Amino acid sequence: MTEAPQTQAAPAARTALHALHISLGGKMILFAGYEMPVQFSLGVLGEHQHTRAQAGLFDVSHMGQAFLVGVNHESTARALEALCPADLLSLKPGQQRYTQLLNEDGGIFDDLMVTRSGDPGEDGVLMLVVNASRKEADFALIEATLPKDVKLLRAPHRALLALQGPMAELVLTRHCADAAALAFMTAGSMKIAGLDCQVSRSGYTGEDGFEISIRAERAERLARTLLGEPEVLPIGLGARDSLRLEAGLCLYGHDIDLTTSPVAAGLAWTIGKRRREEGGFPGAARIQAELAEGPQHRRVGLLPEGRAPARERTEIRDRDDALIGVVTSGGFGPSLNAPLAMGYVASDHAHDGAEVMLVVRGKPMPARVTPMPFIPHRYRRA
Image (tube, rainbow, N blue to C red; front, side, top):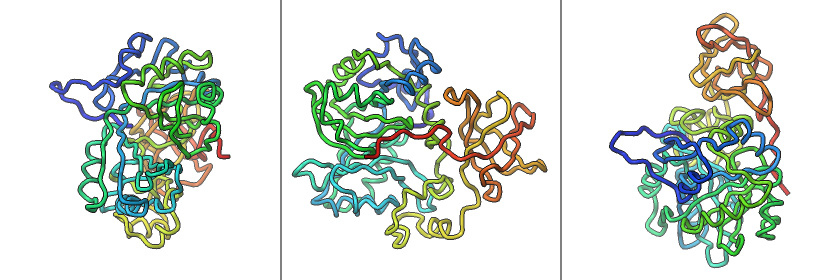
């Protein structure tokens, strides 16, 4: 997610849950062209801790949903592989994969989730979820490169909810027993409280959980059903950001953008072996070279000493005061009870334990490079 530039003449868009957010006391802000809740009455800190302990419900309907449809899986997968470095051809029915759209220089145009439909009769269908501020550009890019036998069907009629936290499965299976069978990064069509939904076991908090796609006119009914459970509270974008930062997950427009490659961003794991060898995606020469020789800069985790957080654009310097990088995301980690950050540093300073200086309010502050995630992921992989 990233906030898109706004003009005074541009009215804010609203999701299907806007009225519900207002009724629940949501504090609304403009985000990526949408009026979205940044927090509810519990506040960012309380919402963060509640999601770590029980279950939080997030409205992520501002994200872009679409279906890529071809004559069979091979045709659809190869069409998208022309823009992405992931091995999509090997996706099994009901399997999901995280990948990136790339530009010709190997920079990240956007990151996205791709799911192969598991439904019989939908062999050629891939479901896409892209970032809100990038969806129009993403869809235009995809449409411009598709062969004639593959079509992109945009899905603005669908809402997207995320139920995240260690009690997410307990809550969801009260209304949908089939959800328990899903493992991390798998998906299926199922009914929740009698409502037709597309459910994936995924999310962007580092916790176990689910993302639920549903027709927009039914979204409030679903949200109220889930919020009726004692373990569930509504959660805003503030806690979503602090949760994903503790999980070491990238935010588009901050930690990744057109200037960063998947290798420099620490996302080489998303590039399948076949794609590494064959190439055939934008910027393949650069990415293959970085895989072999290493990038000039790498995304790293940073733990500052003391209590002062280092925010985005904070300079990172070495012990000799040479500029070696910049913070791309930073703040206070409620689960760590300490400040944390991520950013890019020159590769010779990217090893764990490296001592660096963060220039906060004009003063150098000691910090060290540390492995990510800051808080261990709790995905259910089997």
